[in-house]
Length: 327
Ligand code: PCA
Image 1 (spheres, rainbow, N blue to C red):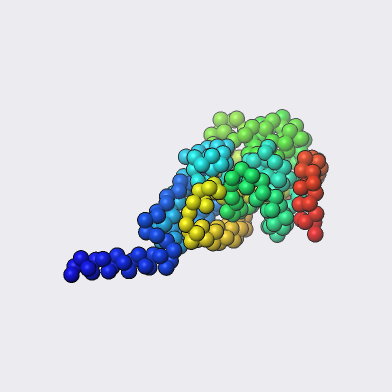
Image 2 (tube, rainbow, N blue to C red):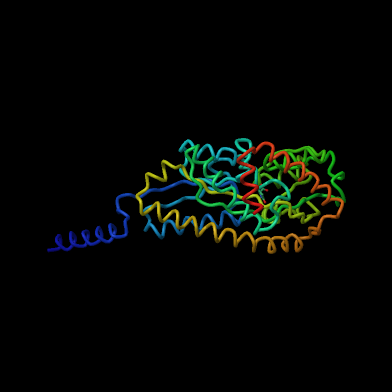
């Protein structure tokens, strides 16, 4: 009797699981490396995405986040996902700009400087972006922008000339190029290493968001933030296509639905973040202001050079994207 009941119960559970499409036997756990710290809004958004996936698949797929480069360092994450070392990961899209100009697009200064323009640029570039990833066996799940980028310095600066000779922290090829064009000396530093790099004098200035400035306590080693609103670089969450396609159909659908939600909530969080973290910089003693006209004009001249350089590199794909963006 007992045995029959148990069998019946097991049968009912099996039917329930089948109706929902998640066979109880197929439980998958994914490790997910991300480059930024736990308190960063991107990481918080990804944690919510992971929760959503676990809940909507009834635990058939769980995603364990390894933040701040703790599992794979930022420069290793894309290839890690491509090679299947990990099934899923987050990267700054423009970290890949040496592979193809489409990855550099959202970091070309002054091309798209608002959330609306950034969304338009994202939509215009998405087909090419997806195609380039697909060629590497990767699938784009979602992308979320950082707040607009501004200039952090130790001492007050009034013009681009004031940056000459400074050791300038870079986070991608575009920030390196800006430093070069400004006559500064670029050095790549990942976000988790910022406090040490600044306090040991390895770098003296940087361009990044109020978010990263606040997350890494810029007030401990920097004095000024110039809100230049130069561009909004995006992070993307990518998945290994083979790993994704190995999931049961219903789990794939649940992942895509959670990804769409995460993209919407991520853009919202980024907008809120801009004002919140700029205020946090002020509250902690950073001198926050708009750049002087001289500084902004100099920065925009650098942007103009970089737009032409990008267009030259990006050829026909680039032309089509810019046309779609300008419509
Ligand atoms: N923070 C990241 C990328 C852009 C941003 O706002 C960084 O500083 O590396």
